[in-house]
Amino acid sequence: MKPAAQFRYSVNTNIFKNKLTLPEIVEICRQAGADGIEWGLGSLENAPDEAREMQKLTREAGLEVMGFINAGQMWKTDLIRQWSAAVADCGGATLRVAHPWFAWDYQESLHQPDNYMELVRRSAQAIRSLAELSKEYHIRYVLETHSGSVAADPWAVRHLMADIDPSAVGAIYDPANTLLEGFIRPRGACELMGPHLAYVHAKNLIFVPTSIHASVDTPRRQHWKMQRTFLDQGMVDFVEVFFALKCGNYQGWISLEEFVTTDYVREISEGIAFLKQCAAAAPGEPQPPFKAFNQW
Image 1 (cartoon, one colour):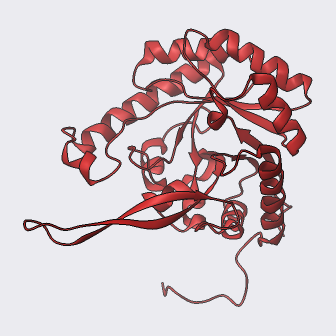
Image 2 (image 1 turned 180 degrees about the vertical axis):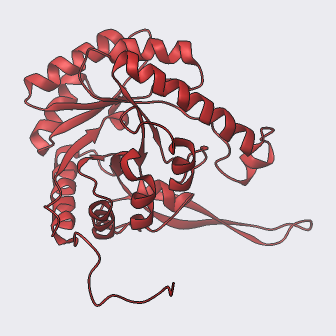
């Protein structure tokens, strides 16, 4: 039997930007029982001082800087060098970079002149450059499985990073994002990404119908929007997610993001408690009786 997986829980701070001070954010995370913080950086100009302050406050609270996010477009090597220098000595093993955007929806795809495969080619080239920068700055660069982007799904991650050192470049698995684009059963997603799975984002979504589009020239089409909801109320089944993580031999950070209320301490603490329950309930490997789906 495999040893029990170890998970730690952090808080993504992007939702707090321009709302709370850095000390207020740290205090929320501390009171909520988080183990660390995934810090969202502001401007590049302020990033060095901001990162140092984030590191100082986080450590003083007895927490860990899980990583930094909001760095620039990954194919702009000189820009990524500046972001890397800003955080290299400030704790946090990871820096999230932006990968090429393709299309969020039909309207964006309709007006997107770039060919998808050309963006994939450029992305692969940029990832090779990141792997070299990682040797210099000792940072693990990460891309997020984000709908609309080139690496929206685990297959794209696998394709782009197959020959790349996973300690240099990895991916954030966001199972809620893959509901919007690139969904694969969580176990398949984790096994596909393998050691390139850097950490996990935890949020939940539901889809609600909005308008129905119809005109003389076009057929009737139902429009939908996503709506954030509590971790235990959305379409993502986190017991299945933790089962997938265990099957993929993942141990590490789960970072909560995009909260529903402004009672942050309560929502985060309840979210962490819920995720721990899901982790405890999830089996560590496939369970008998096994089904013979495939005959080889």
